[in-house]
Image (cartoon, rainbow over all chains, first blue to last red):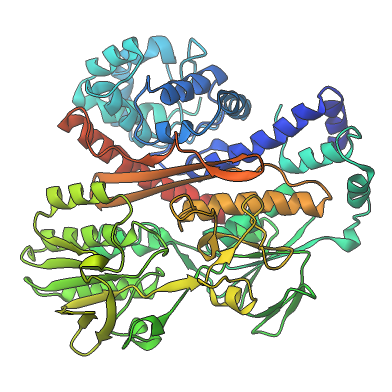
Length: 190
Length: 439
């Protein structure tokens, strides 16, 4: 059965598109080193990227490339990729399933986190798993440590972060709530 | 819709517009009784990643990985073990992950490779035939390169700890036993060597231990055969901020090259001076792993030249060399550094090239990147990035990308954030790259 679907698939594509698909697979494999096999991270400070929206992934990469968005490492990497490669990578990872890595937290932390997510809910959804816009990342089952580091960037005025609303809301969060908020989202399976 | 490599190959093979008949018939003629055989020598980052991805791309290929030790210890981040910031167990992994994916893992040592008959023999008396061989033996130390040094001393009172494992722990013990006011000497060989920023990160980690264990009067001296080093501005900044006055670097042109040691008195001799140490950490010169040399794959400098696009040896067909053993890139400044990350992307490119070739298909375009983090203190890390691309059939270092982390930033707050992020990223990176190779 599997073979038949490849044949059907092949009919709909040109030869160059097939070569492109293979090249993108090869290119995407270089992302695994840091972001995990097929974009699902096993390292708590590195985000999973599989299953984030195409628009979000592409916007991030293009903003790093242009220097519009601060990054510690990715900007230097992504400058080596063409806009076409960036677009292909965004499509590639967006088509993989979002795989939440559910990290357990105690009830008190979860309750504190939930109570403090008012600023996040409108855009990311109650559990962080239902963004209201294609440009907004999923947070449910994302690594808590990574989310904390990302918030640090948004809360720091001296590095360039492009999203005004996100910057504003990140700064509204009480320092003491950050851990609870990130643990809350990290613990959500959906 | 996403297709994996195996599917991609099948798709190509059934699409008449893309490849000539010979390619398709080569694939069609493959039967289960004549499976292609790939042997991988060496189970470090390069070998493990190659084995895993070959199997992943084409599960019909029989992949056998031969490795001496049942447990691998990662060199990256092992300097943190010396300072006590990290447990060595966090850097160790076995081969069950690969076995579960259908890869044959032999804990054995290769006795010889016959490139003409395409056979590998092992110390335990096994003979394996291969259609393609991945050579990833890491490095071999040239003990005779420094007078007075030997393998026995490396395993005894003068551990180099440039291959992570028991020597890493032995060096840690020596550091812990060192008196306050003592001198810790690190002797750096002439490049190219494994892990270009490693000695300078080690100096920082040693200073980190000394500073926080009541031994702040001690000194760390780098006696270097080279006149410059990787991430120099970043290291010098970190040393000055975190360990002011503690770390001294002596360049090769300033008589930094160690030519002789006396193990008993722990003295390192340069051409004109002698340096008495409390702990003497001599990193001996090294070159490609012994089996690469014995197979005739090494050049006059002791490293293996490869086709930059496929990683195939320029000496013997069907042997692909990845990782620290190879020279990847034709100019010293643009060559891929000897790092785990380089080894990993080289292994993936070799895997794609091998699977394509065994299926009668042309080699796909390879992609190579390198990211290498160094940590000088808790929460203080930085990196170097390299990106390569193929232009007109040649591998080119992309100058507009890559480079080292910024030395200066907008403000002290921004600088601290940058260093903190990269120190944290290193911790995530190690987990992902280990899983990418071994899980």
